[in-house]
Length: 184
Picture 1: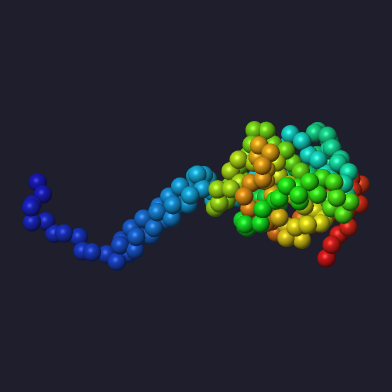
Picture 2: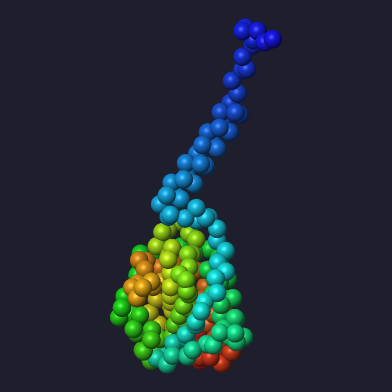
């Protein structure tokens, strides 16, 4: 039977530090999860399949049929770009720019459509319900490597910026889909 006069454990700085670290991690994770509404905000892999892809080549829409090698190639490259490092920026897509991507003779953009809407896991809430991803290839905002989102016909606040759109541009050129000029 244990005695009421048992020796207490001595305080340990390591146990205190470990306890503090665990509590800090839980609090930070909880705050970001509440702010984003996404318990998997830290997951960077994006592997969604679009239901349609349209390439707007200098004002001409080009439908990429599902099931074709070009459709799968563009999907894989877009998923790879979105799986890498990305940052959110307050730069948003205006209706004028969105229409210009579709019709302007000096702009090219890739638009991927998803149903049901998809979530891009990140530390921001804005890309949590996306039906359309718009990737400028040439023209306004292309050099910033921006990706814009739309849902229910309206733009999503801000944009995500990927490391590079070069692989997408080179693929579009190599497949003969559009003669996109490679900008410096």
